[in-house]
Amino acid sequence: METNDALMSPDELLAALNDLLEAERAGVKVALAGRKAAETETMGAFMTGLRDDEARWCAMLAGQIKRLGGSPSGACGAFYDKVMALDEPVERLALLNRGQGWVVRKLDAMIPRVKDEVLRADLREMADSHVENIAETDQLILEIRSGGD
Image (cartoon, rainbow, N blue to C red):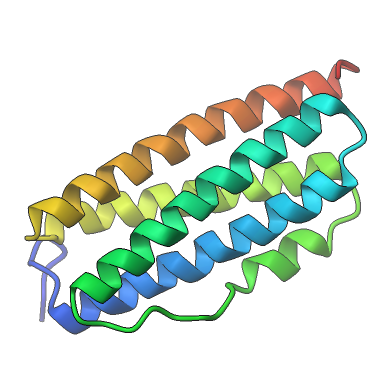
């Protein structure tokens, strides 16, 4: 039985990277939908920035999967449908934030098990970016709930 701190096998690593790619692709679609539905300039700008960030990580993950000899998944994670099933923008933002937290937890568990230093650095940068996005989303939720923009 493999322990949590054992290095990931190539197949396990590629599967995990593709899971993340599918989740990030769902994030792009959620942000695009959020941008289209935005009722304020603040919300629209936030969603545009989030979309750009999620797309950046999609590109990084697809590139790393190819570099490691794998084939990037073309699928979109089921998370998109879960978020879009909610009616209220604040509910969508809260669920989006929980999804961002899932990505951070997955990355934090993966990084120590990745031998490739280039990939490890990219994954750490991705995790840090998601932590920043969570804080920004929390702030936006507070502003919306308090009646701000």
